[in-house]
Image (cartoon, rainbow, N blue to C red; front, side, top):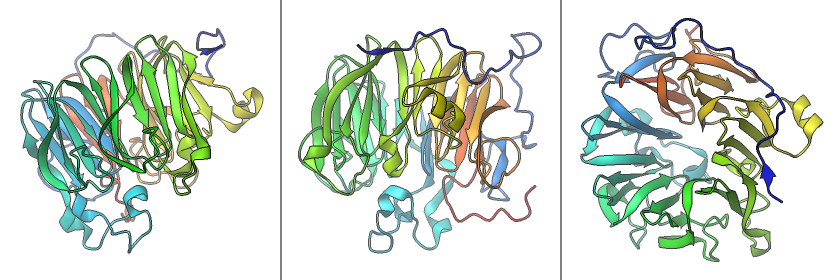
Length: 408
């Protein structure tokens, strides 16, 4: 019997409806910086807890850790953030490609202002050190680091510019050294880092696409678990049951299985060994559920509620359109266009106009309105408004060595 997200219990948090007329002119966020034009140079100071407008005429946005991408209304793809040259070597920092360590002289290896990468873009997905773009003609292109074969080109050679991968792709998803693609026939394929059995195969890396599942709507993955929502609303998962990717053991692998019904999307906690034990689940009804290790790290599930309900999905919000999970913080977009944040806010990543030192808050707080899409990086967030304005806030694209002196 699959768990059904159709219970009548009230959510842990309730958010009141916005005051005033539902249809109004799109306005900047309340705590926005007074910038009259999009960003054309590095912001000063570098750590900005208030949203500032970085681009206009945007229709789609993506972010992961320290990389960002946006597609404008003319189907041009723009990218910015830390480049692959910023990554520290494995000799300098163990697991540097995973936890986000950076080399010296970091300022010379960061694109602080968006730059044009390619045209005719339909959708984009940013991974840790690589990017995937599907063009209007359903061709998949990728570039960036290729240590685990995450580009899917049959080799481990890095590609600084877009390289063609395959035809007939509906949508692509890039994660931590892993890539997935949903084809036009709704089949799911994957390639890259397989240390956590996310590609089901016994090999540690797959440098070419391998078939995974049929009839897929969307996918999300960490280093040790894959969450797949099928078109019938079933949530499937598989991977390493321990949540550990550094001690590979075939006995830890669990095969694909259906666990829930009535699901629209599901998101893994994106960091480290906790990735196998935490997720946010969005039901088709608009109810948002937290599962497992979700407290003040963006999961919006107080410890008292976890003790009360045990190891079951807990309803935390209703009326949710989409959810985005960064590094110990999350952004929640409601159906009415209002964006909320929760979690750690030590670098202003929650976008509330101030820095918060210490533990985070699991209670969602309003960031801005009139939002149609958002994205969460490691220490920064972004929001796309209905008029095409793209706003960004927080740390410099996930860089962890930023000073917060002098900021309120």
